[in-house]
Image (tube, rainbow, N blue to C red; front, side, top):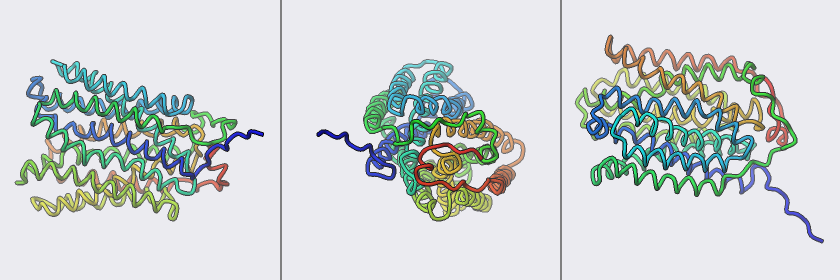
Length: 406
């Protein structure tokens, strides 16, 4: 008599294969996007665009992938993560190859901003949501490993991009990254499989979830945190150079943030099961506040700037790893892709408005005023999280299945 094989269970070895696929996908897309600074000067000079117009290409990308995440998340909930990731692979390849041939920055807003932003949306939210569905007891640790690809990609792809640009120019460098990135996403898609959740359980309508206290509190905290979160990626290198650091030393600070973020993602993610992801998310915002105190007092001290980048990276990595775990704990994993996509629109809002507001403050007042304002915002984000409702008590099966309402 023939028997059918049992489906893989949550917290199984199969789930860790999916974690590997998520790590590879975030490594690829964020490594490429966060290497934009390496291309910045060459692109601006070649296209005859100013710094503001060139920087807008990155801002469009960031806003687009966070806002589009809700669409990608819904698509993954309905069709599974694999076809969505394949769409992302195609968008990445087409986006970078066409960007390598643009002669106008305005065309680049579409080829890079929209297409590469689409690739990130397809590779990030769907894969993070999928990992959340594969785990219950080790969920925060698994999510920490999955999003550690972001920091690792920053460490690897940024210096690789610099070498490619020095050797072949920025256009050829984007061709190489486009081909390589597309292949890596196709490989990741092979291991991107649906989690073993109860498919007979219908997800609670998203419109109902977004009105619940737990979602509103997390959304508010994410908007506040994201207003300040991206400031070092835009301004720390310029700040350091203005105070005597070499260009290489100034750029290295961003790499330190990326490296430390891996520690935050893995370390705080692993502690989530013991202390709870909500309280550790709060701790992450407190850590970010403390890091900006170091930036405030650093002045021209490069060692203190390194300390700032290290502490900031740990807090940043912790927040990125823990936010999906908070949502899965509150609402379950059925429909988690759409829930995370909706949450990440908050990061899109913060990422779109935070850096320009900070730039205006710097121009009109000083870096010190801007840093203090960022500290206040991070502290407010941490305080808001006190309003989160307690996590519902669920059996493992329920945790892996139905999305609760809080």
